[in-house]
Length: 304
Image 1 (cartoon, rainbow, N blue to C red):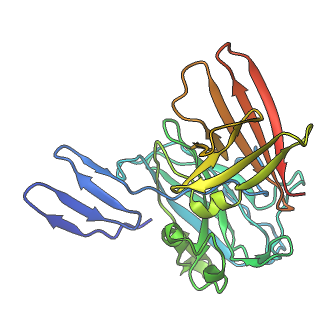
Image 2: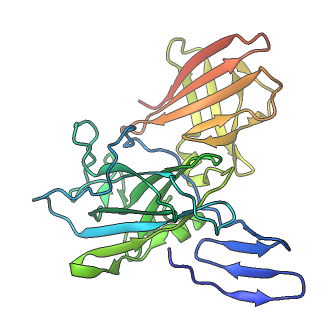
């Protein structure tokens, strides 16, 4: 993304205000909080998409567009080379290719020596989500870079009439991800999006809203678990079917729709992986390892 910067000289610091956040000079180098806000994986993600950055299909309608940008380290300055970037989106009719071997409008590329990446594709369109309200047009991105938490996010476009009505695009943290569609060469449009990686990201509140509620074990409906939001974090009230204290406990987001109980002594661990279905139902797989190293797995669902 082209960086628009404002540098203020002061006795002890310099601050750069960029399109993605703030960079502060600590006396030796620029460090920053220019994080890119995160989301969770929706129902239309498919792993193992082919390595390619050209999604254009001859004869398919749509407005041609190039999505490009630079992947950077968490100092918001140093390019990250060989980051893995996955892109997926709907076609001109608002439909995702969820099962064909062609992986239409899906693909994976890697950033070059200067951190640059690009995709040639078509602009997605708004669509009616499972019979509910329309979702604004958007790109889905997953960026994986060694040393950082995987980043999952959605990109929206200025002027879309559905942005203000959608709880995810209308979130305050999504403002940096509502991007201008610019005129490029030969009638092709351009969208610029730069990313600064982070060692740790919080899932956004609208994303966590998809996960909260009461879940029932698939094998025994007497075993339940509730997830809820407290202090802008996801909390839970049961471990392997056993109820906790009445206040519940906080979970830590570790990427890829995965949350864990923080600060547990080894070898104890408690991890929850969520999978959102196209019907709106949510599947949650709990993996619990006790103090003896024994592993237990429970699967819960919410909705139909």
